[in-house]
Amino acid sequence: MTLDDYRKEINKIDDELLELFQKRMRIAEGIAEYKKANNIPILNSSVERAKLADLSSKADVDMVFYSRILFNTLFEMSRSYQEKLNHPKSVLMQKIENAIDNTNKLFPSAGNIACQGVEGAYSQLACDRMFSSPNIMYFTTFEGVFSAIDKNLCKYGILPLENSTAGSVNKVYDLMMKYKFNIIRSVRLKIDHNLLVKKGVKIKDIKEIYSHEQAISQCSEFIKSLGPVKINVVENTAIAAMLVSTSDRTDIAALSSRPCAELYGLNCISQSVQDKGNNYTKFICISKDIEIYPGADKTSIMMVLPHKPGSLYKVLSRFYVLGINLIKLESRPIPDRDFEFMFYFDIETPVYSEQFTMLINELDEMSEDFRYLGSYLEII
Image (tube, rainbow, N blue to C red; front, top):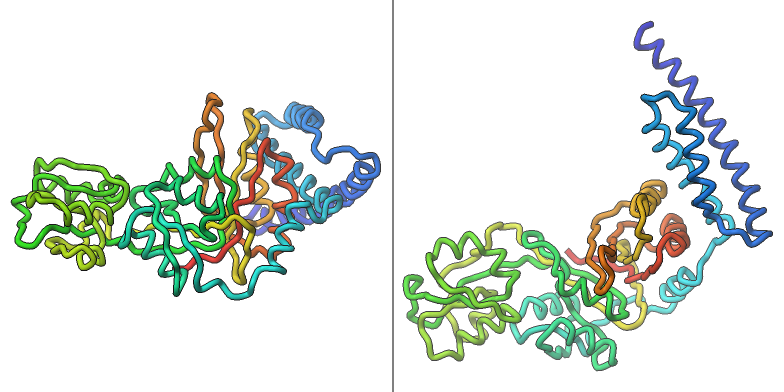
């Protein structure tokens, strides 16, 4: 047989597969109607396991693995279709649609905004990117920002979530399990760390450096080049600059932003000392209420999945079946629960799309705990 002959055979089989697939999905409609009428859950794990075992026993030995993938995918699509027919809108989806309808079409320009650190912090710079006239309240810790939103002390809060060089800010992810909030916007901020000192101080004079742990990680190669200097971790890069400014010592320096040099009267003796030039940090703006502004095409969710094989695969396959792009997957251990994790997902699809509605309707039933963290537009 020639290559064209093989392709003709494949095309013929594909046509037959399509006809059988559509016939299978039409039968699934009847199953969905029956389950709805008799109040039967869509998912029956024991039936699926038995079916997969039966099909695997019938497949050729070298086709068992591929057959399981094929039929797992078919089962996922069938469940997705039945969910769509039986549950067009979940309670959560109704809340999301209500938020879309009732949120002001223009993002606010002002408000009481909680930021971690002091004036000049990168959180403040991110805040200024989102709000034109913010009234900023500074808090010592990330938890202080969450608490300010939770207690209605501030309307919005700004928090760093991940850095392109140093990775995720784990403290923030861990606090997400403790507080209820909603992400309403995000921004990617270019991070330039600079070595700031008092006037007249030279690099050879420096014995200690102050900065935030993320900044220290992002400038590790530069720090090595300075020789045996002591590293001091503080809450914020702006606090580091303030400590150098107010200290009587002339042998210390801060890794901080250029605006902090002017703000605290320091000299910048080395510019952009981070290891990589494309150093960005994603900051999120959170609120207590669900607010969804026009252009929202990113969504964050978190889930606790059943502690058994295949749980994560079932979620990931649902993204695949719906054609939704997963742009971030993060896991964090759940306190007091051995070897169990909270999974965080960032997905990319318009909040107005049919695929988004289908996903939200289905994920709640696939997890032990499901939380919608918000849909938002990201400023670049």
